[in-house]
Length: 83
Image (cartoon, rainbow, N blue to C red; front, top):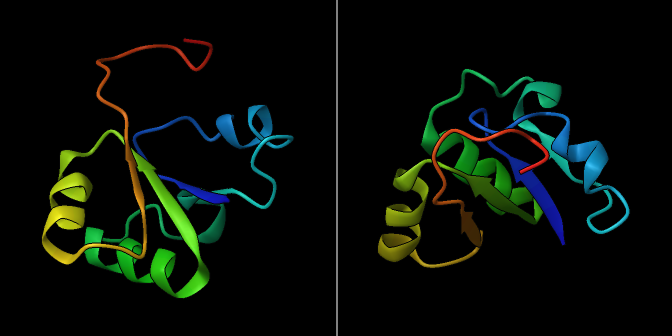
């Protein structure tokens, strides 16, 4: 599984999770850091990524449109990358 980490998550997670989720990327590293939710959704769908975000909008979009792409919604407040 390849993860597409949203802007609201640390880009350092790509390195931290590399052995478990190879070929994962952060939106910043592919020039999508200012893209809207629809653009991220379409990129993930077209490139077989699972979206990882703290943004509830992606969770709601997955209820409305189904998958692909799959969405991992992280329901945590502010926390460090280690946490």
